Amino acid sequence: MDAPTPAELILAAVRAIPAGEVAAYGEVARRAGLPGRARLAARVLAGNDDPRLPWHRVLRSDGRIAFPRESAGWLEQSRRLRAEGVAVVEGRVRMPRGAGSLDADIWGPA
Image (cartoon, rainbow, N blue to C red; front, side):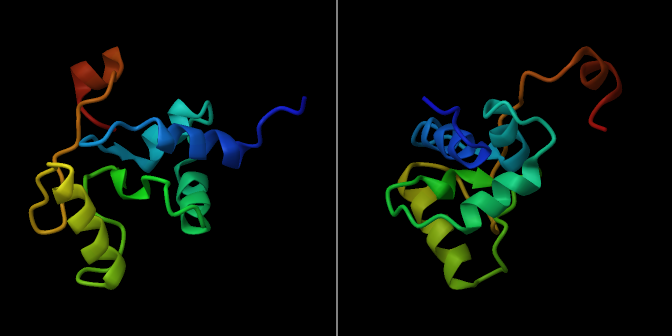
């Protein structure tokens, strides 16, 4: 059996995000075993055609929705997140604190 492609790994990581929770593109890439590939995660999601994929649970690292403000995608992502009980304020969600590292804990975010 062939090894999964990077796109398949990213899609699996997105499917694993529980309802009511969110993750940043970089976190999705890390969970997929592709650290540092946040842009790849964004490209994979942009090309997604599976209506069941919970794409709405993936945000920018600062918690902002990546779509242009008030666009159809922005409004749909906000609606879906709120339907799952996620607080969306002006297009932003409070991001969960990740596992981090000792450097990040001592010195703060990079």
